Image (cartoon, rainbow, N blue to C red; front, side, top):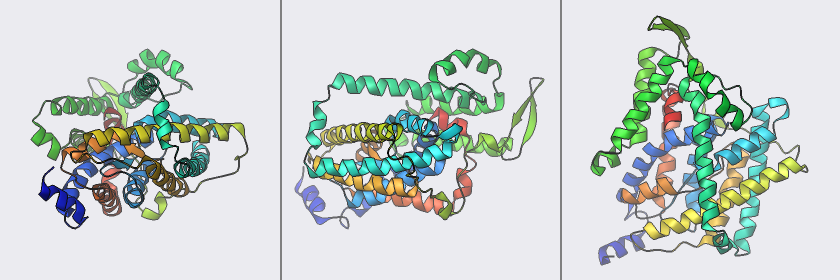
Length: 373
């Protein structure tokens, strides 16, 4: 590391503003579609993913033991949060299940603070790597399976993953072709983008271009207005139910937690699962990012888990998906020249500004685009 770099790092956010702001902006372009898609995949409102990225960026930067990581919603918690929402929902009321999951997130955040205060963060590394890799592989498989009905534009009536897999042939025969076309175009763009020079993919991330293409097709097909289209001598229905829905007022983004079943076994299970999986993923990701840091800095894992706990309390109280250290976005942050923790802050601010001033654009994003991403 050069003396110039050392001096800049010691100088703080002013000296590194340009580098961190550029990296934060590029991460924002990646994080916005992913945050919405992750929340929806878990059965949470799209607003929960957006708020998670904002809170993880702003509050997560102010209380952190890391130097260059990005906080936000992550795919690794989809099954955990989705399972919690389902198990805590009375009579299939998913909104109630989500409110109770928010309450579980608040308590899980408090447990994370205790782990940090008692300096137990390093105990995370006692978990066998094979278990962690197996867990992540299983999560990835389940995530992909759950996106199939959205990609095909059909309603999922199955109540379990096994039922969903068994119902796939039937769903294929009911494919809504215009919606599937959107998903196919997004898939194609993501594949092509992986072969482009890094100079291009850094400035114009693949997920952003895929969602941008979905937006174009959404406007072209007029999906915001319910109607039928005739393709290949067959009528297909399209309408706003195939689009993301986010409240256009910032105040309406917030959902409050519900603590009415705190002393029950399902609630305790949700708390412990969110706490254990979230903490494990976050600390392992922070450790991995340290290996990628060009300045070879080391994170204070105990203080970082305290910061995650405080941030997750805010997430639970305001209606956001729990945050962890996100490895893919952190890697993109480093690749695009971030120098300090403030890149995470700027990415959160960029998302807030976009949602506050351009919410209508988000509500034209096809769900199939996000499922493809």
